[in-house]
Structures are given as C-alpha cells and as structure tokens.
Length: 390
Image 1 (cartoon, rainbow, N blue to C red):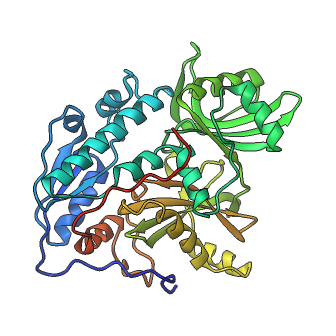
Image 2 (image 1 turned 90 degrees about the vertical axis):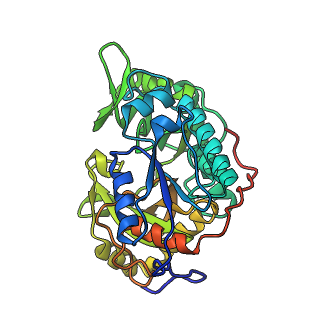
C-alpha cells in the first residue's frame, strides 16, 4: 500500500534527542505500562506516571518541555467512582456526570500543561466533542465525512424514540449513550411494528430493575423490557443512528479500527463478531486484514479509501495526536462510513504499522513516541466549531 495523498510518514525517534515524558493514567493499567515500555525502548528517560486518582483530587504538577500523554481513566473502579459519583461502576447510569467531571479535569490539565510550558497529547475541546457522540457525529458530517444518518436533538425515552424512528423511516438503529465508551450501554435495535422489537446489548437487567453493563451480549424481545432499557439510558443523553448493514468476513459481521497518528493512518485491524457490536472485549475477534483488502479490491475499490476516510475523520480533531477511527464497510465492502472516533482508540497489543507509513515494526505507542519528535513547540487550543450542543 502506498501512502495516501497529502500524508507524510511518521518519523522515527531521532538518535541522541531525549525527550522527557509524563503519563496521566492508571499506573498498573496496560495502557500506561505499554506506553512507558515504548518510551524506554526509544531511548528516552523513564516517564513520570501521574495517577488519575491523584489528578482528580488536584494533586499534579508539570515541568517545562515535558511531553504529557493524557490517557484513558478507564478500568479503575476508584477512578470511575470519582468520575461517576456511583458506588458500583458497572451501573448503566451516570455517564452524563462522568462526562462533565472528566472534561472539566481535562480542561484543567491541559491549561496546567500550557502554563508549565509543557506539551499535551490532546486538546481539551477535541476531547469534549469526542466524548459526546452527538457532537462528534455532527462535526464529522459538517466536514463532509461519511457517517450514518442520525436523529438530531434530544430523545426523551422509548415512546418518543419509537415515533421518531418511524417518522424517519428507520427500522434498525444503534441507540448509544451519548457519553459512553467501549460499547457500554449500546443497543442494536430493530423495530418491526405492531410491538415487535429486538434489542441486542451488553446491558443486564437485575431482578430489582437496576441495569448493569456486562461482558455478555444478550437479547430483549418484549417491548416493555426494551422500553425500560431505553428509558433508563435516556436521562444521560442518547445518540441514535441508522444501523448500516456491515460487511462480513467468515460469516461474521466486520468493521475496521484505524489508528491515525499525527494525521496519518498508521495501523488498521479488522474486527469481527457474531453480534452487531464488534468490540473485542465483547467476544469480537481480530479478522484478516489481507482478506479485507482483497474483498475491497474485488468490488473495484481500494484499501486506501478506508485510510483516507479515517484520516479525514481525524483531521476534525487537529489538536489531538492520536485517535482510533471505527470505519464501517457497508454494501459489502464497497462503501465506508465512520461510526465513531475514539480519543483512546490505540489499545491494540502486538499490532504493528501498515507498510509505507513509516510505522512498520512499531506498535501504536512506539509510533506516537516517534511522532513527538516532530510535535509543534506548543499546541494551540482547538477552536470549537458550531456543532451539536451538549
């Protein structure tokens, strides 16, 4: 594969140039440890690790010239409790509170980074949009990036959702918590009329009616059960989009996660599943990228089209070094739309870079470390666009 037009390869670390890094993350989490491994492997000093549990209590300081990676606060029960304000981090509710607290923390962090004369891996306003699926979808659409058709404006609950889907002529939709991640609370919904519904989701309803995220995908086929599910999710905000029929590979639904670093698509993986959600932690599995290339070529297309769509999506967030773009192949492998853009979509262990990108032999973390060698002296705050309000 040749580099896509207008792109420049990610450069490897320049020998003899040593940068100091800090990582805002959860210390024992593999995201933090894998990035630290990449920093050391590139010959830089051991990075400082600033724990999210301390950050959220206001205990942090940055140093001039330091390059600060702001990583996911996920997979830590104490941090999740601090952000969501609930005692059980598996509960469905609380994503709106999580969003307000998290984006406030990122704004304060990036302001402190700038004040210290350090550099940040993310832009706070980019993050605020990336973690609101409604605003992210609107920004992509405004930039001409292909996205699924979506409902606009707030959705109050099941009765309103059912009516609005009918009016829009949509019988199959993804109903997503506006501020969710990792498919938490996502519902793949089919409405066939006359009370016939099917909801596929990882949300589990307990005997007392409370709802929890789990690692097992299940189906709800009674309208009262689906109504209760949607009504529980609605207060935190919903993003609803047409369910595009995905391509398949080996009889399984398939899509692609493309990692874009410094504007360049450097890594790609096919994700396959028996379920509509292809997330690897929900039973999805990595597919065959070469087979996907062949399937695209057989339709008269080019794999470069996938990378170009991902790069166009990433260009909507220019202040953020790395994003993971979920590309949805539809109509077989003929057309491509962007399902989501993930601020922390780089956790793909053992995956090395695509040929011709300058990231060959490097994982996603090593690629980002290399890219910091050409980072600008200071990232300017990203100016908010006129997209969908929170």
